[in-house]
Length: 340
Image (cartoon, rainbow, N blue to C red; front, side):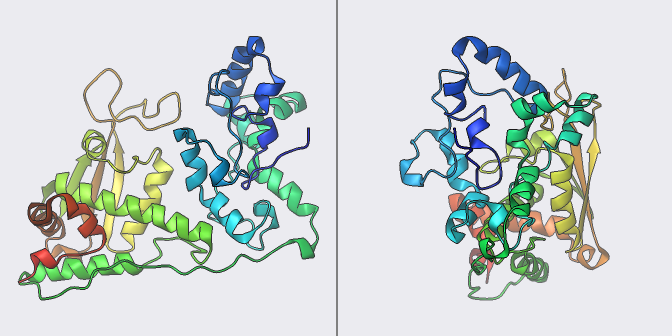
């Protein structure tokens, strides 16, 4: 069959999660095939009886209502490709950009290093190539001429900050509010925020960052200018976000916060931090102890405003006065309920 390539460079026509592979591999051979896929990717394909993914080139209105397809509908690379009417990232003038979901995690060299032996051509073709998105895109790009490459259409960042209708009687509240305004007006470390993929990436990062600040401020253990919070407390209060799954992801958010004088680091409490699926554990195996702790401190200019104590007071008061709307109000910096 004709090769089908996703917006981000995966090969849909060869993907174990796709409808196409269920036409190529019999039910009898599926289990062995699934185990082989898991060996190299770390993930086991969905059971054979499922019909399979239709791929990200399928319009939203033609996708089944099954929850599985939510990841396609939300995918920033898919949205960007649709908006700019390009087949995939290789056709974009910004390729490779920092906002594509295309990864090099499944490059042959990386998988070889992971399993401790060289990957032969046959293994690569059968189990890895379909996920080696960046290599696939680079190959496509090398075969294009200039007339086939399009610059993306610009989009503009919208910052939702509520209008403040009064004055803070508490000086510290006012200073912390000003710090939050700085954070809200920043690009949160996103480059290329003027593209659909960049802006969508920004919205995801914004949602996670404000939720983390909310959890830190309300549930962290405060000792003067320091704050500690453990993985169990984070997990219990994480909704509506999913917790960050590895140390590199945490580092991204720590780097953002450090630009505003808020410094954090991970203290790992176990030698078995990751699950077999590659996600950070919440608890140390066979115990009820946290797998990690986040330790935070602030610069001198924030210490004089008792940053963590003041943050806790702001969020607690916001929660008491606005109830279910408290977190939404916090994200919009709608602190009007705290004003004189």
